[in-house]
Length: 140
Image (cartoon, rainbow, N blue to C red; front, side, top):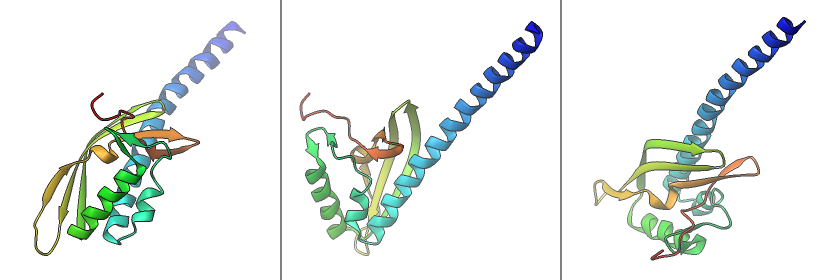
């Protein structure tokens, strides 16, 4: 009897460890997909589609949602193409930090790199990853 309970407990423990690793891979894939959707929306000039991925409480180094929206509009006026390189994704329960590099280009300008700070911090809210910012005001 105790042997059976021990074996069941052991199997549940092993399975739970595997689920955690698989869940981490699934969450990284979801974040990668979100970034690719931002990339596609930029190419298609759909700024509203980009902002459907932003959290309502977005704040990054003093930039709120409206500031970030203006930044995207300004970049879209200057550039027509975007390439986002994902360098690393770190997930910590409901938060994620993604190291990325954004490269903009147009017919006149070839590859202008920008750090991807404005889309580097994510928050898992009600089952969905949202771009959240670092939640810092400028100068903190």
